[in-house]
Length: 406
Image 1: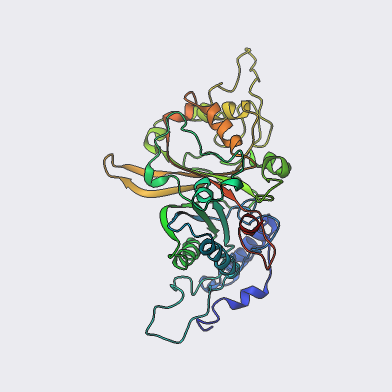
Image 2: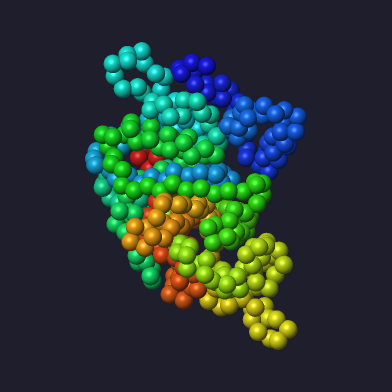
């Protein structure tokens, strides 16, 4: 394969859903090869050729089953020229269509005396299920003079109890969420999009992350060892109620909340298993809510044991969140960024991302957790952002068109 035609054959394959049967077949195939062929090291990664369609009613990367890696980037505008920003999003639309199908944004030129069009780190890699999801903040709309387009519920997130938000991990005008089953593919995609928009944006903050699972129907675990996202099943049963905006330029879009949450692993590791369970309000091994047997059994914060004592601590994370009566879609990734210099402890935690129909769903839950959440002893929120993610588009349209032209 030449560099010009890198991964070009993938575009002919169309969309394939990342479903449990797909992963099951993948594992069966690898197992069979391992049993019969000692040269299986040369076998192509079974997730390499997997692609998601870029166009659709909603942006990909929201209800798409989580890929194993994320690169999340927030940028600031350094122009207020609306036509320039329209051009950026038109170009990003064309580039994203190609990148998500495993192609470069443009073919390489023949002039070796100028920098290559593509940075090259993904030249030998396929799409790996890449999705790209775009959102804009309230400040984006204000800077471009689109005050009349700001939805009534699109205000900045308030300061929550115990927040220690760092300026270099908060705010920003545009977010790009790149998810893929290969970390380098995700980073490459964002790098190309940023390179082509340097005349209009400046990078502000970013965070990479990872998640792991053996089968696609398994809830991943966070770095505290607990399953993260069990409640998503209930949220996805009623997506129009909990996720999708149903009118205006944001129709079929949603709101994205990003929080960088430092997890104090050393403190957690000194906590007994019972203490860990009571902090979450769930049983670590099974993921079941305290007082229940299975992960997806309904949460009952009033359930009592044979002695009449309430089983789940009232200030456990699950009990407080459940009492809010609000639901969101979590799409979080763990991160590990080395060592904190002044403490010698892990610099690790959670890139919490949630999608919701209105920001008030997240605000309501976070307010309910407040200062009393047992989890507060083990975590610190250090980064934050709120973005409105456009609805999906049809081929021939461009990202943000409903905002810019209606």
